[in-house]
Amino acid sequence: MVQSRQVSPEQLRQFFRPQSIALVGATDNSRWSLYTYENLRNYSFPGAIYLVNPNREIVHGQQAYKTLRDIPEVVDLAFVMVSTPRVLPIMQEAAELGTKNFVILTSGFSEMGEEGARLEREILTFAQHHGLILLGPNGNGFINITNQITPYGLPIMPPLKRGPVGVVLQSGALASAVLSYAQGHGIGLSLLVAMGNETMISVTDVVDYLLE
Image (cartoon, rainbow, N blue to C red; front, side):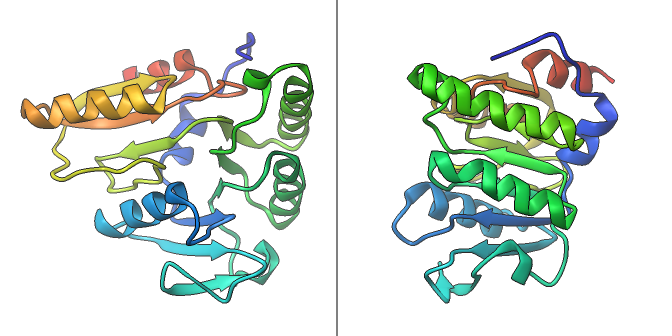
């Protein structure tokens, strides 16, 4: 759902450099949840990682919070992995608390038909009206190699080599394949982004940011 709107390089600079991240919908039963958590841990994310699950006290061996409201600070980035109908309520809760940046891993939106497209329009409208920045939905997140920030829902094999090359692709699987190629050939990367549906942030927006 790419439309003629722009997310500024300054907004993306803040988006790709969160100091705290909440994994909303974190669960031991999801490989995406486990991969995202392990990526942040294994590549030494310097900020706080919060796990949100209303039904579990411990997830991935770490304390889990029932809601975003229970977290002791306003998080910079919410990485959302809940069911499709729950995405908008989670965004509403987070926005009320002051969170501005969202990665939506959840699928089931415009790629699935008209009902999904309607739900996607709803989250876009809400984001626009409340000054939020949204990557996805149906996207695997990003890998900021330069700053060691890796909220990404697929496995990241070591090593991660820093360098000048940025990678921006719609498909998480293809983005991971490019990452593997770069690692195998000693190519250093600065940022890799798996865009998903491009509901708000577009490939053009990220390219403009990388060129600044």
